[in-house]
Each structure stands twice: as C-alpha cells, then as structure tokens.
Length: 445
Ligand SMILES: Cc1ncc(COP(=O)(O)O)c(C=O)c1O
Image (cartoon, rainbow, N blue to C red; front, side, top):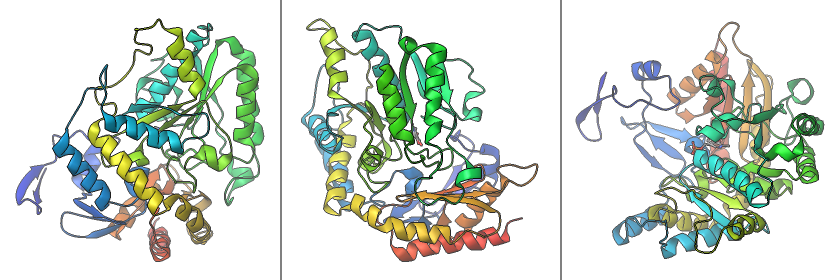
C-alpha cells in the first residue's frame, strides 16, 4: 500500500517496515500515523491533533519535544556523536550515572546503562547470576517471574515474563524459570482505588516455589512493582513487603522492573520509594531521558557491584556484558536535561498531586457500558472491559481506534484500556480523555 506523506510531499510505501507488536495486515489496511508532537499532543500527517493519554508508550513523562531536552541532544550531536564505552569513558556518561544514582534508593548507587527495557531485564538477570557465582553459590540459577509479568522481549525477559502469547512460540529458550501467580483478583478487588486491600498472601506462593526447587537453586525474583503492559495490575497492600521478606529469608535477590514505574509515574521517583520496598536490582528505561534517545539502565545495590567486581582478578573485565551503545552520548545528554527538567518542574510531585483528580475522573466511568473494573495508582489507570463473547480483545482494539478517531490516544491490552499521560497533564485534559472514552464505550457493541 502507498500513501501520500503531506509533510514531505513524497509517496511512502507501508510494505517494508515489519512493525513490532502490531497486527501488520490490519494496520496497513487502515494506518494510524503520527508525524509531529509537542507537549501533551501528537499531530497526524494531515494535521489532526491527538491528545496523548499514554505518554507515547509510558515514556514521555515530561511531555513531547521539550526544548531543554531537544537542545541538549542537538548540542551533544554537534560535539561528540559517539564514543566507545568499553575500556574507554566519556565524561557525560559518568555525569549521567551520578544523576541516576542520586535519585535511586539508598544503597543503590551503581548504574549500568543499556538501550531499552528489554536489555535492562536481561542485564539484571545476568547480574543476579554473576552475583551468586561471585559469592560462591553458582547453583543459584532459577529466575522466578510472575504470570502476566512483562520484562521485554529478549530471551531472559521473554522467559521470566508471564504473558502466554509472548512465550508460546519460544518454549524453554532459557532453562530454569518458574512463575508466581498474578495478583489480579477481580472477584475481591474490582473498582479498588489505589492499592487493593486483598491479596498480600499471593506473595506466600514464593515459599511454595522455594520448597519445590530449594533456595540454593534460586537466583532472583523479578516483578514489576506495578504491572503495566499486561493491563495495569496494582500490587495489593502488603504484597511487595512480603515478597521482600521471603527473598531475604532465602538469600534470593529481588529485581524490580521499573521500566514503566520509574521517574514519577506513581508520584514518586521510583515505585521502590512509593511502596517503601527496596529491591536488590532495579531496571529502568523509557522516561529515564523522556524517550528522546533509546536508553535504559540497571541500578544495582552497591554490594552487588562490589561482590562481582571484587571476585575478579585485578586487571580483568569483571562482568563480561555490555552494549555498543551503552551510555550513548546523545542518550546521556537527553538524560541529564530530562532529569533537570523533572526537578525544576517538580513533575513527580505534580503527578502525586494530580493523582486524586485523575482517580476521581477515571472512576466516574464506573457503570459505563462494558466496564467491569477500573483501577489506578499515581498517573496510571486501567479500565477493564468485558470481552465480547467469542472475540476477546476486539472491544479493546475498537475502543482504541475510536478514541484515536476522536482525537485521544489510549492504549489497550486485550480488553483493558490503559492510561498513563505525561505528568504535565492538566485537569481539563483528564476530563477530555475520560469523556472521550465514555462516549466511545457508549457506541461499542
Ligand atoms: C515493565 C517493562 N519491562 C520491560 C519493557 C521492555 O522495554 P523495551 O520495549 O524498551 O525493550 C517494558 C516495555 O513496555 C516494560 O513495561
């Protein structure tokens, strides 16, 4: 299929780009294209304004095309485009790591740069294995994930993840994974505001898994403190605390995948701060530099870094892992400018203050057609629709398409609509998103 690109006056072909996580045939038959962005908005190539209810893909927390970030990237591109991060360093990379270390929970001041959330997950898994080996416990190799968990698409993340569709074509790429049950419990927790009251005991399942495999074989538990991609699953009160305690009891590392929750999404720097639970390794990406240049990071407890580094003979590379684009200069420049902007505009605090209004607006959809649950925390919201009999996922897709046609970007996972707007969102824009969804739900079969 060919399309006229009004921005350049050229014809573009849609055939060649094999699009990720996209129903390619369906999309290309009726494409939804974005060509420009600023603040809370996107524009389509033909100039239609779209209110961004999802911060892109949960990543543009400061809003689009913010001037200080754009200028920092432009300046860095003109100064030094690229520098190798293996056995060489560049000042801006160290500066970026210090910025992140200052934001991280106490005792977690070692920062390893990657280029995505997926790379961060796999890096954290390798760090956990390397740590136990360094400590003289190489049998600790099993990684425990959770059903409905999402840790990206690389091998470690695919295997530790718990979304059946993402795993089924790739059985047992990595030996030794097990899964906790998902904490999703509509029967007890539907329409909870904030953390659901029921379900801390889901964490006790870790004891069953430990009894089955023996603690001496388990390296780490990896969970999203709030699961985003599988449909906004908020941790029950007391659940993360229990997981932490059971991991400690058995010498198992706890990895928080904060790719979505990092950098203000829940009204605190990290979910670790919001919930008062500190992991051993914390993965992040997305809003780390407002998604201006691909970047991720793993933040490690100082003791994990020390154990791995000190176990190797002097002069040898201690952790044989890294990416050509780790700490890419453009990504680092964007990171420093982004974090400065977050601080100057107090956006994490702003998210916290806006959250009650967001919650009230979202829950006003209770009773709207097809809605079987609404859940929220910070500036994240999930609206679960009853699946259409025989066609699960269709309602979610149709709601997304109709909202887009009505000028509002809403994400969907199967029949769950997810909202995660930039942290600069205004109250009127929240109303507009909610009223658009209400209208769209009214029209859906
Ligand atoms: C919790 C979590 N981990 C990992 C990833 C993967 O990140 P990326 O798409 O940057 O590889 C995502 C992406 O949404 C995520 O939500």
